[in-house]
Length: 458
Image (cartoon, rainbow, N blue to C red; front, side):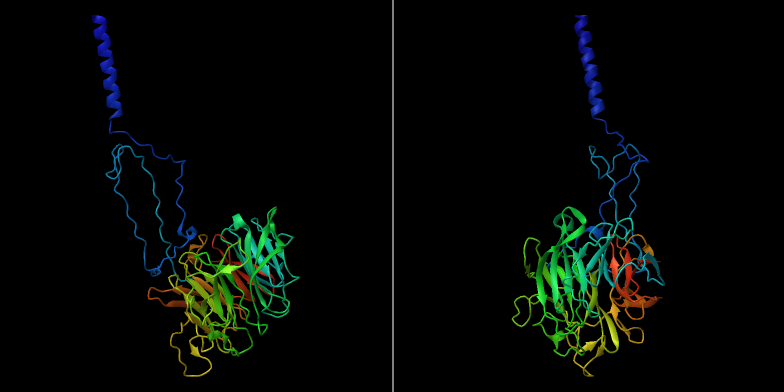
């Protein structure tokens, strides 16, 4: 009998200890030690913009705006936060703080590789640390992640590219957003007869530093009546569509009136859906002139003379278009990310803000530029990029543009009022044919005559 009572008491004690241990609310949750790190969530610059039917205004952060942060009330160790259930483990949720922006007062150009290229026209990336440099004659070369220029070319199509005139040649390069999976990239070039081609090529599946020149698929071609004003930019927008800059066909004064003609591809920016499994392109249903019997479905924007470099802000999705002028004025045009397309930028009714053929002129419905400069300061605009890299916070939020003839570099800075503050901040000795942007958002300039590449630094 005593033995049974002893066993019963022992069982009751064990049950009591177990129950009190499991039911305690005073459990201290583990916290990371000083050697642990919390991985942040991807930033906005790696997040594709969502296209919606209802446009939303693009916010502009100015130098006078400060990021507001909320500091949570501290909890006593061993206590449970009111928003945390007893069984939850606390998780650090990083928040993204906007980078303060200010208009840049000056920049420098740091040499990357000097004198190694022949008439370089463009620089871009394929989503990694390599830089791809386009040479006008029809060659694409690679600067590897160590900063070394590879001896062999990535692509050589000089056998089909005509570049005898200043504005002809291999003019543009864009890697497909899913390049790492499909190996597809797109180029814009003029052929031996001077006409324009938009073609897709594929990388060699056995060698990431070489593309197959025999893999060309011609998606679009159009005749050029004159050897100048070929445009040439190709770039994927935040919506995943391929955008193409097309000049008005050349000569002077737009003799065929292409800039104000929606029934020609000339003098426009085109917007196409390209599927790497197809030999043709499709028209996005949301293109502004779809269903208009008096306009071509491919057109996204029009009224352009020679869009020499356009770019998308990788954060906001806004579009900047530099349009080369003729007699007196060079300009930079702007399209907000929430635009549904169809903007008419005015050529050849306007040159910059000014009437061109007749004065006065009817500018009803025309979109004026955000920046212009006169031919006292240059002769041919070269469009650039909004700086969104993280290496140089001083440059953040400034758009850079230059002049091909004089090498002047301006920065444009958005004011809260919606206007753009401009200043000439660098007088370079170079003939700058193009800007370039790497995967991290750093910016470069290309010296057309000197065959050199420079990085923009504070």
